[in-house]
Length: 86
View 1 (cartoon, rainbow, N blue to C red):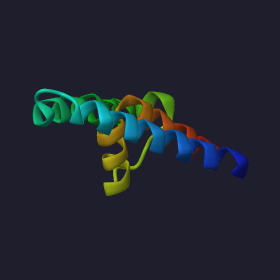
View 2 (tube, rainbow, N blue to C red):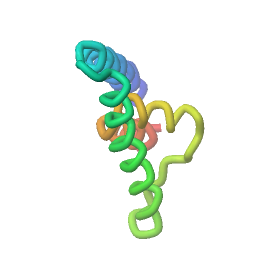
View 3 (cartoon, helix red, strand yellow):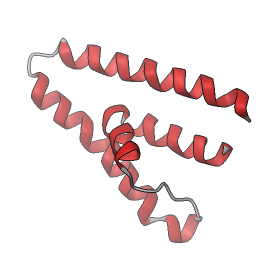
């Protein structure tokens, strides 16, 4: 199980760098960064809303909010995988 944590962290860092690169090369970086925040936070909200049915929840903390905001839906997926592994 510990063998999967390092690749998950590396993948999250790579996704973050790709997203930052895409946002900085946009014509409207503020608007595109705000629009990239919404799907991740919405995915985190949806995971927690349906937790009564699935028994899968991600605690809302500054770390989980920032991961879901920066990485979006793949970030929420990584949070779920890491939580499942641990």
